[in-house]
Image (cartoon, rainbow, N blue to C red):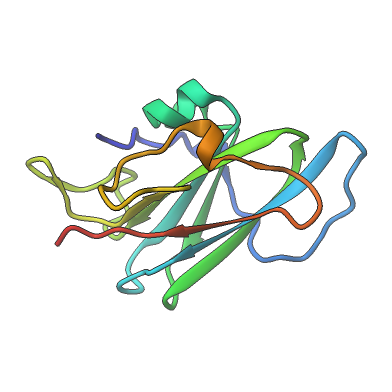
Length: 147
């Protein structure tokens, strides 16, 4: 399971929970990533609006991507002006800033999380992980580290 190198043109830098004016066809979704083990690097959060892309962790097909400096035990981001619909999230604590999930053989060396992730650290089904954009929609991801 590898995170694909992120395209810099897809990176959003919207940080925080401040609401922006939204058109009737768009909405905001807030995400908190909890459990950072250090302040190294950044946290990359991807919003997926397609089940296939989420379940395959196809970062090139993410609806939106945010990159937040790692700071403290948790970080937060709000995706603004998303088309209304359902979204599932994945996150990576990219400690070495290479855009990939570091691996030692089959064992991840950096933290990662999926919405509705179980104890085994595997992605859940899109329908179990997704939340609808709008209102007070919020998703909380808990990073998993194997080492």
